[in-house]
Length: 416
Figure 1 (cartoon, rainbow, N blue to C red):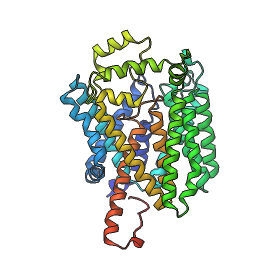
Figure 2: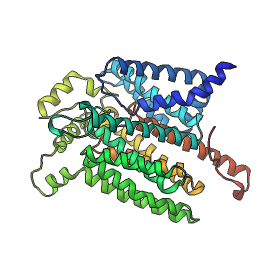
Figure 3: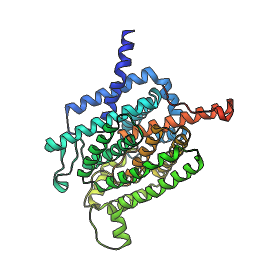
């Protein structure tokens, strides 16, 4: 009995520590501290699986498209060019993040989940700002001299998180009267970090996400179909705008014919697209391409700059799981997006609206800012949380609509 009471008090704190860990506040060479955090994360996931495996499994199987996509890396062992790595990375990354994400969806109410995420983002922002100002490790060296990276291994990882954090706090400051000053302070701190990261792509994504914030007022009205169409239209327009901002080099070089070598991404993309053409449908296997010595050697020989990834989440996932894997992810994302928009229009909930903002930031960042698909980071973990949570809520609404008159059906405000 005493253990049960203690667990209930400690559980959200432990979950928060794990959620903070998957913001990747560490360099992979950090040593003993990183290994301790990894061990803690593994232990917590093991405990929640033992205690809540039924609810976790229930949430995962509700989203069939996501489930198929999550299983594809495991099946890819059959055609992987490095099957041992594919299997090991599936167990260490895909399975672990899926279990943790579904746990968050099944265990916490919408309000509790928002509070947990907001605290995590706040702690990460404050800690990274202090490190960037005080410690040399908090700023980049070399080509990006002086750019803030905070606790992260690269300025782009830091900037991507700050873009989402700034938008999240801005929405809370606008639409939640409680703690408005704190939320505005969080927005200012995150935006300062984003600015000093010198990451223009993340800045463009943040601007696009902030432009979505006025949409919430439309959801407070009764015109659901109009709101739905406006949201889809604006998401499409801002998504294209973000892509153009992120692909500035491609547009100038290929469309205008002018020389621009800001990052060399177009050359990198062309090379990896050519490698995709060798195995277009199923790819090289989950994580197999990047751990294949022959492919790494060929990439280093062909490219003047090679950092071990494709600088695009969509190209990266296609290299690993082919066009089938890319199609499954896009279908999963669009399905989750539609469910989220529908639930916003029905519930008028700020929590679902913040999920919409998160989905926009995550999707936009895949073009050039960083890869989060099938990675053990907060973006992928929370994507699984949102996908499974909205799937369960939609299922509940369908069942309720079959048993009650339409006017009596209303979505539950939370899951406990």
